[in-house]
Image 1 (tube, rainbow, N blue to C red):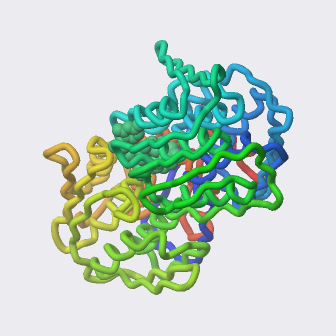
Image 2 (image 1 turned 120 degrees about the vertical axis):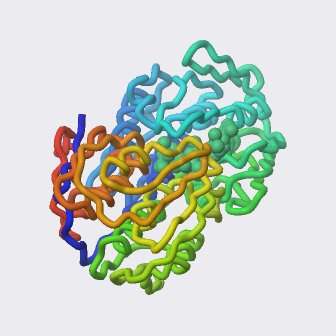
Length: 428
Ligand SMILES: CC(=O)N[C@H]1[C@@H](OP(=O)(O)OP(=O)(O)OC[C@H]2O[C@@H](n3ccc(=O)[nH]c3=O)[C@H](O)[C@@H]2O)O[C@H](CO)[C@@H](O)[C@@H]1O
Ligand SMILES: C=C(OP(=O)(O)O)C(=O)O
């Protein structure tokens, strides 16, 4: 079981470069199996989710090679195979193999995905989309079987009942080679969805409207990669380092950022009074003084991201009064609260989805547990701020999605070590 051990209390400074977006990468890799040629990605983050996706690809006889942030995938020898359920369960985005395998073979059998424990995470909207395109969906226990081999997939109009990133991408993957036109309404507008549409369109797909409420897809027969796809920077990783820098920094530059992807986040930091200079593709955060409390409500993009409500929390401890967070996407996403309280922080949740964060004068190191990736990110920041040693157990959740965490934090001056994870395999 991986552990992160931090000797806190030392201010951070310097520069950190943000990696490729986890939530793009974990969709692009399954999307690659739709290609009729090998595909190449760069700016790929070194995260456990990528390793597990490579493992799943290998089970389908799809070779992949990952070095120095460059990932090549050759899906031309793909075979239909049983997918390794432990790897499928290790991450949420394994659900993209449903759409991608449907698009490739007209059928798929995939174990219900894993991913972080944020409360209930249904996939009914994904299924609704697959059925609209003509797939028969059967669920037996944990196994979901999708089958459209009798008549093939045919374009259809699908209106999502809930704005869902996963359902939007999964329906795109299934529709991209379907017969005719698919129209998906009430879709998610996250930048990662635009990234995936760009990758597929550059291979010859016909996807229009990514980034708006309605996406139109006209099916094509072949997808051929002609160039390397550069993955967009991870806005959640960037937001995490911005919070860390504002909470306990002496001047930190965060590079490889698309500031437009973080507007609802940076506007909250500015409202608090964080010293921030936003450049074209970088953000400088100066030392913080006299921060004000804020009210935050998580919303689908372009609203305040649920994936940043926990990472911003340690910064809220510095504010002069009580801040409130309303978590509308995952009301039970509060596994950080008890752990931060163990470190001396004052925060509580009396009603589901409502968190009150108070000024907390001093944090002290403790042994805590990362129940999920962003709860873990909050603990990393708190551990850096705390006096003494913090041991974060169950740190695999954090390493699922934070690129080269140990190297990046060490370069900012953090005294930390990671134990119990196969680091050699995570190195370039
Ligand atoms: C791999 C990936 O990209 N993960 C992100 C993705 O997760 P994920 O794609 O799983 O999240 P969704 O956007 O689908 O979920 C949004 C909301 O819709 C609900 N819902 C979703 C699908 C469905 O079929 N039925 C349904 O009711 C969910 O319970 C949740 O309340 O978006 C989340 C919300 O921004 C982020 O926290 C995750 O980091
Ligand atoms: C919840 C997250 O990831 P996943 O959907 O992969 O579990 C996240 O990145 O914050």
